[in-house]
Length: 323
Image 1: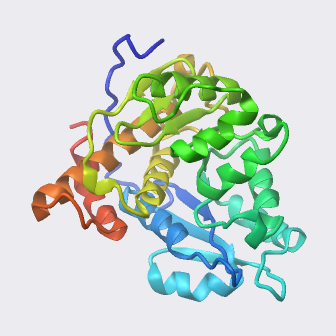
Image 2 (image 1 turned 60 degrees about the vertical axis):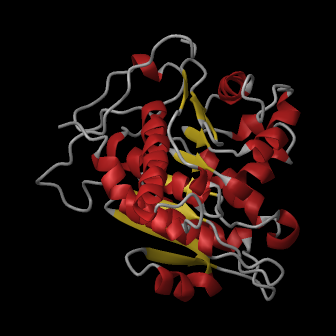
């Protein structure tokens, strides 16, 4: 199916009135960097906050141990586990592996990448944790930010992707990933963005979300462009929010197990009616509507904070819910 063919707009499934926090899934966010050269804490907490605002029952942060308490001060509604670090506050891969595996054991969806830091500051842990998360087959993974960048630096990275995955690059991250894949379509050109997104989804066997003023989503068979949104979204942290929204919808509504190419034909179990493509589309659409709603309520085209965007998510999502 190509973008020229109509694709039915999915609706957000009803919320189970008898559900509890376990019913609505756990999102694990692997991110953050405590290295003194590039400390990053905001990105993973924004992602976890967005996951909760989008309806996930639980959000768990897996981040460098020195960031544990500051993160919980920023987001007391989440839980957190600390990854062991060395004297330079860089995560130690072989020591962090068990802690990371324990966190993943409770996950219904994972986001890897927000604020992990570049490898020259965060060390080999970025590569190690990214590969560890992508090597498992049962938990859907949203791959964003520094996790995308470290994959782009690896020869033959496509062979490492075992997990059902949603890649969420902005045009710069897309270009870095596209180079080793020999994808030459310009991710910034409106005339070629859809083709570029579809090509990456096909090459990697993932759902690709090519972010921008008109975000494109493709699973390699179906390609869709979001026609909603607002210029106020062009500010730091909104991409981290998007990753949390998508992961939240995956945790709530996508059945575990392989969900990639061919998923359009897979039966959907009761209570888990979405596949990764539709969860990604709904997340993108809700994110865009949240931005529009903020702009309307503030009568402004700029000045949005990513934390404020998360507060607009419940109403935006409710507008997409099946009645």
